Image 1 (cartoon, one colour):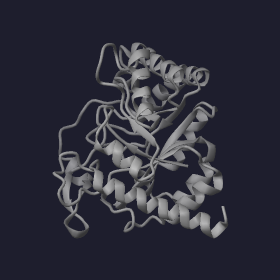
Image 2 (tube, rainbow, N blue to C red):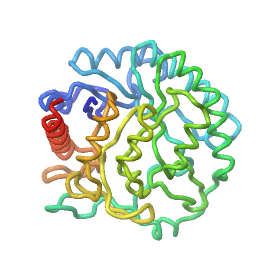
Image 3 (cartoon, helix red, strand yellow):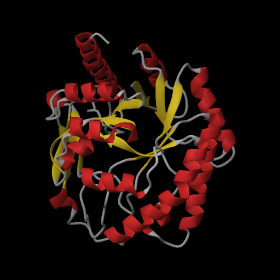
Image 4 (cartoon, rainbow, N blue to C red):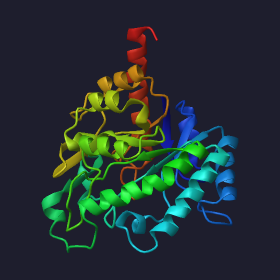
Length: 318
């Protein structure tokens, strides 16, 4: 597996810190600077080379063109799907291997607090469904419609991904729970992931195994790793205390998930894709302007995960 950090599309101190930690792979959003739309060839080529020139391999685009019309089955969905096809073709041309996307609309990632005090006064996030449900209802699509729209989407884009050599990595709904304020959500369980993979049987139709969301689902994460195996194209490592109805994100070494067993499972299946720490606590001296995405906690997590990997390899002689 390749440890990676999510980072900006322009060089920052984080790029240097990552390399000093021994990280050589990167995850980013789509290019936001220069001429042209971010899914066009030239901006993606320049972004790929910007990382390469700095000594980092850009493996994943964890960002997406507008998709709400496609998710909800509204007028305009075919135009949005054509944009996705353009993105995939151009990712293939420049050599970016994985596209991480979500199937949530209109609600996206939800939290009810991003300033909960964790270990030593660090700041973590929390979701409480009872509080979120007090908000006004929103227009969405039914579960049946979401499944139909996803099947339509995959039928259109997976052949393009196959031709381009790009792997799709569907991220769980966060939180993996629904309905929320009248909005249904379907990427919420291991069973539903099985259904997603059955919708289009291709190695290019795969998943982002976000361990925090799988923990909130109540999943046996090492078992899920072994089951999904070659259909895992991207990994987020984080952990939560609680359930999909109410959870608090925690430090990687204090949650209920046995991360050592997860690393063992990834090693046993021969996972060779990108793995990045996700939603790390905000530590002393950081302003919490971007909860979960500051540097200190992520660098700590990289060291912790490297230690677990090296311990496993030492024990097995690999």
